[in-house]
Length: 324
Image 1 (cartoon, one colour):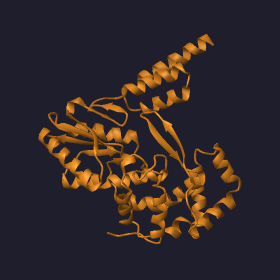
Image 2 (image 1 turned 60 degrees about the horizontal axis):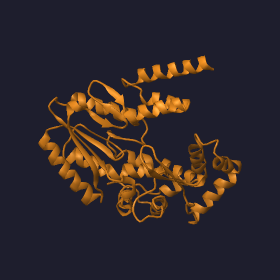
Image 3 (image 1 turned 60 degrees about the vertical axis):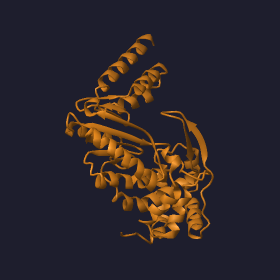
């Protein structure tokens, strides 16, 4: 297996750090931390460069907060200067790992968001035999259960630059002995790296043709019932012994029942957004949170739900204007 070296110097030139700043600053221009960094951009880049080159760089403590949608999670927000360093690393290594990922691994990859994942799932249902089954699985507390020792070995299989790997692993530590923090740019890449062996096991060893994964949710299509039972047992064994993970839940269902995946209820001939999204849409309209309502309409693109959402949205605006 070919390993890439001499990446530390590529990732952390002053030009690379400057580009990383521009990448990190996208959509953050109004943030105070971004403004303060940019206000003294030259000295900030020079300081980062000096710390990195002289082995004095360490990430600053995270700012943590809780979110409750779609479920309770703790988000760890890095300091802006650490976002710059993460973007510099990402720019240097992403293409190296990208080559090893299967096409059906979605999330945090260019052109592979929820809409593309939902499109694949619907297409897979259409290709599946009518009397076949789907097997939907997800990992229990995935980000919080990632074994950093295993992740380190996975990274070193591709990257032979010890200095860079050391910096990369700094962004996996958030105080707990196991897991990686949710909120880092690099955590998204690490999630892809960590479950990549699972993708290849399912595609190559189990030889499942119709398969896709979005972070820790994954579906096997066009199976017989016996295959689904057998493959689930083998997958449970693989993730436990190879990745030190365990399943959260599984759903075995007839193909004609469709799948609940990436925020959509999908069948071979139709697709709807989830009931939770409908509830959030109505709540947004009641609170006059137009931005949130428009975002949910965008989420409903290419679904049978979108026309109804647009109609409700327009009727609500019309009533408000009449009362206004």
